Image: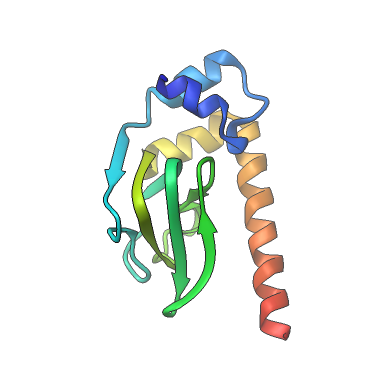
Length: 137
């Protein structure tokens, strides 16, 4: 399966043209992570946006598990947007494959492809609502 085939199956990139998918594919080298390996660490600078293409990963904030990610899920957009530190640690649960977008390329994706911008904003809104609900319980 090619990178563009994988990207077509990622909800973040749904509705994008073949040309747009191919352009994104040209910006995304594949990375692999071993079981138990930290994909990103809370508090570290966020320089990459990551889309999981295989396997699963656990998300922890302040040492508490808050979510599990799988194929098609993404992470790292918050730090890339605001330039801040990672808000959570994400650890591979078994072998994980992922596509990695560097900060400058991520900004170009947001500028050039409205669908990416829309899906990122939608995901951020869902996370804000989830966190706000959890804080009031």
